[in-house]
Image (cartoon, rainbow, N blue to C red; front, side):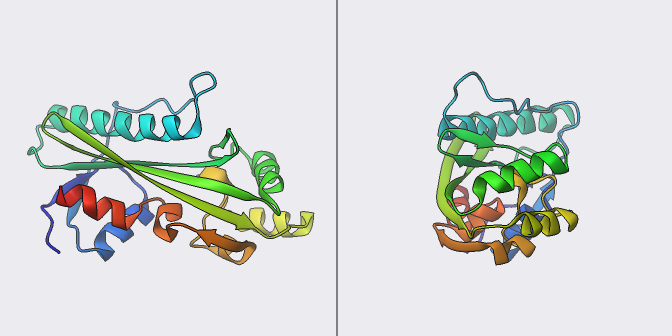
Amino acid sequence: MTFLKIYLASASPRRAELLTQIGVTFDVLRLGEYTVDESVHGREAPLAYVKRLARAKAVAGLQAMRAQKRVGRPLLAADTTVCLGRTILGKPQDAADARRMLTLLSGKTHRVLTAIAVAHGKSVKVAVSDSRVTFARLSRRDIDAYIATGEPFDKAGAYGIQGKAGALISHLAGSYTGVMGLPVHETALLLRA
């Protein structure tokens, strides 16, 4: 597979690692002042939310490209959302918030939606990976020990499947790389298109 060199509108080391894994060359594009408000709009459904954010990040990336006078090549943006029913679990604000989220997820199956957006010229195409993740029943001690690792912070739903939380997950149906933050199959399809 050969891809054009792209811009990645994300500072996520996991997304960079996954793009490299599938042979995509890229430059990380810093958005600077073109940030995206990640707040939920009213009773917005998780699928609508994740698609809106991925598209908004791609549009912000295009604005940053223009402002930085960057060469017009494809730009990839993404957003990952963890949800339990219609409840969206964002990044925890602190240890208490991480504990709340992990307690909610304990012994339950939740969805991880990762939307990717590829912008090129005036076109923005979006694809979504929808996975189901089941956590084992977690004791308070399990949750506290995981929080003490520092991994829950800066991660949607307060966990990273590629780290120590992998031992807390009893089942996954869907895309492992999608749960990590960049579904490589969907990404490859969008980049080819």
